[in-house]
Image 1 (cartoon, rainbow, N blue to C red):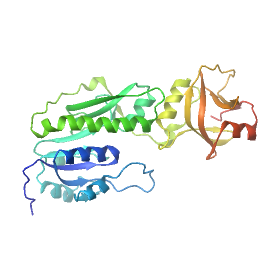
Image 2: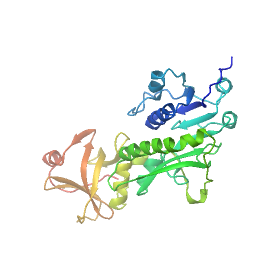
Image 3: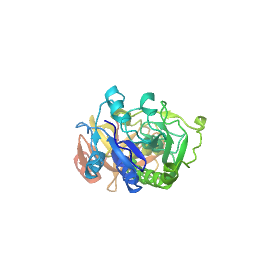
Image 4: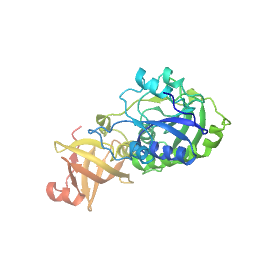
Length: 313
């Protein structure tokens, strides 16, 4: 049975995470008829620190489905019957294939967490910090079968400050996504939005990251290690190493003007502060865990003394 047509644009929204929540709110604020929300079941093995798209949809009595694969014939037929004008994808984790993308009359659009064409692909905020970028943002673009390469409709930039963590930057990117969508949506719904083709030569594709990608290479310079630490700081898995033969997580650092009086990367406490000597330069270690236990610099010195301890790497 086909759904009765609305006098306002009809959208099917594929969404997850905080960007999904904020951008779904923007659509509702502009009076878009959201006929269906497609989202993910929360993974019990994942740290769920973000807001619920399914919860927001339930608040507004919007039907929700959580297929493992949205490209199955059953899901495609369910969505086709809604006769949507638009698809919107806001941090949805599955790729939509051609048969789905051909359904909406006015196009399928995705919100990506970088300034495309830079940082196409997975976890763009984390990658931007690791690579020392001073700016990122959000981009609304038309979807194709290839990830993050469609024409751009809107972008909003935000700064990355030298000590910003991934969580802090992600919060900025979430607001950037909301602003970008809110600003362009009236023209988009009216069929007046202008789209700009991407110059893919000005960016690159990045893959996902695993917890083991957070292992610190102490031969690197202090700034590079600092970038890794803040890029994977909680709620992400954290930057890891070995000290005294035990696992250590480095959770917060600052780049210092200290000079490392050591030929090898090492950890030490001096004047009540913890430091790490890197391949070049020294980091002040603000927060760390040893063997899963959070520990202050004073507590470490009380237990292990004020010597210099080489990292086991």
